[in-house]
Image (tube, rainbow, N blue to C red; front, top):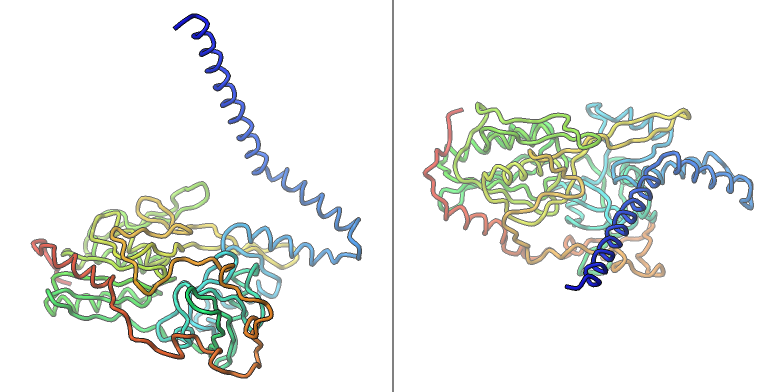
Length: 435
């Protein structure tokens, strides 16, 4: 290579390096500006000044402030929210108070694409009886649009007196938008169920991991072991919400040692690690876990523990991704901010919120559609069922398709796969220990 060529190569390399350094510095500087509270506050002050000085009418600054705070919390996650003074009082009156749970529709809810999203209806609850399914999007609640209102506000709209009805316009892939009429009632979550399958495989269908439910799972597991079960399938499909402690206990029945879960604070700081207690382990034999889009929070603790400890196959599709704790911060005017301050995470620190748990063996049910874009499903505003009215007469459009015309249940391909995988495994490891 000639001296001229070498010289040009050096110059070009130096130029590229300089661009990379300057570009990186500019990007870093821009990012620092974006995350500078002072810079953001100056933008808000400028907007407020224009509203106060230039808006065509005299603005109600209390409403402006409330709207701004809603927007601030809305940009974080579905569970962080601004609360009015009355909502703060209601939150304090019901939070952690036995017997004060509001009467609703019996479903674990979140947000998706700014709409209200059904993670999972409670088995046998009002939403389930009305035909709502995992993955449904609720577009209207009694004629009020759910888009761009907080999850907390949407839940309040769903709550009401026992026996009262609420009309929901539902978007579901593969069908025309429809209105489901749900009769509110107190929800009784069924306990865990157990059955034996060929090959001495016990199947435990968990329906809840709320406080105290781990004891029910334990009882079903012990019953199966007494019946001679040598392998176990733990079905966590459509198990959303629940208690972190209950998820840890159920994990511990199958995992004898090591970390099972963590809680993560600001800056990814590990706040607490939950370890297995060897004395609480009940089953050491082959086991598998079933998960789906309705698996969230406490159930994700169990699924992630199985996956990270290589305890057994996790069969199904990626779980929803939830599990967080909020803290109420009151403001001077009596209103407040409910902010997520703690995230639940796997034993290796992978937070579930927004990520979920990936199965080790992916099996998609044939009757479940892919995730949908609500914009592709919304009908015209002139549609007679677009904005359901509370007192509108009922007809077949007021019933969810599955509730109006029950269809034959398709083959459970996920359970089938889990059973196949277990039948291939040896039972040489100890199957159980006395309890």
